[in-house]
Amino acid sequence: MRFNSGYGFRRPVAILMCFLFAGTSCVTGPEDVDVSHIGLELEVRRFEQSLFELDIDSLDHGITEIEAEYGSFFTFFAAGSINIGRRDNPSFNNALMGFVNDPQIKDVMANVSEAYEDIDDIEVDLEDAFRRYMHYFPGKPVPQVVTYISGFNSSLITTDKVLGIGLDMYLGTDCAYYKRLFLPQYKIENMKRELIVADCMRGWLTSDMELDNNNSTMLRQMIYHGKVLYYLDLVAPTTEDQYKIGYTKEQLQWCHNNEAEMWAHLVDAEMLYSTDFTQVIKYIGEAPFTVGFPEGSPGRTGWWIGWQIVRSFMENNEAISLAELMQIEDEQQILSKSKYKPNR
Image (tube, rainbow, N blue to C red):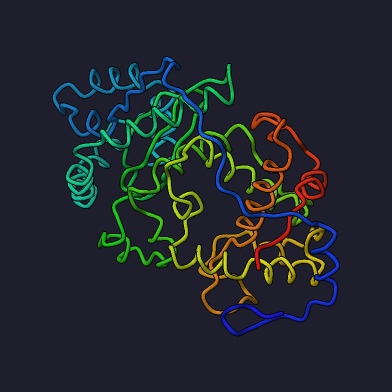
């Protein structure tokens, strides 16, 4: 058996494994739900505008007002994103104004103001996504959403009550600053507006559902990321698959074309139950491609395969809800009951 690109791996065990997990991974997508009756009015507040409008002549008063309005987010932003410490630091005010008045930061702010003068589309899509979140996870809190800029230090901030979006991390593939920062192209490809909603919904879920990487098997990590991507299928159903996982269309198609061969390779190499981080990271970690796979492969192919397994599991176990899926800790149970059979 060969990859469609012309390269292949020997796979004596793979044929047996494919029969053991008979079924299908072809899915048409989860059934949509009506959430119009769910009461939610989501307002995205513009923290960066409040920050850059501070009056130097009444700075203490202005900072106090911002701190009162944005609460814990302001603390996380100052201490975590721009690293100036807490408000009780004697140099806090000067450090904050140093950030605001930095010429390059001011230029970044100008770029953000132009690109995100209107965020109505993001607000509408996030409101719809969080209504779906409320449908699937009743009783779970929905965050206040704010935007900010951090000088390219963070794309998201999550607290117990707030979800922050670092707009300077979504200025598009043509942003000159990304090149100056020597960011790799595969990262730049995911720094655009189209990924904001998926990133936000992923970030809010994973802040409450962290994966313990210590001694996690490859399969556990695959299923974890597969669950998160399936969750995006349900809460952001109009978002294209490429933006949920952060691939180009070509990379997504490569995965579809080579699904069976990728699965066979993982089985043959006995990777599913490996806890060797140096090996697992090749399939799970951020990278421009998957080491050992033919040209055209994206990174994080383990995420993609885990996604197909979870999709197949939910298709073949319709009584299980999304919330119940997230509570299943036995990844082997999900694999076995998925009846996963890769596309050929």
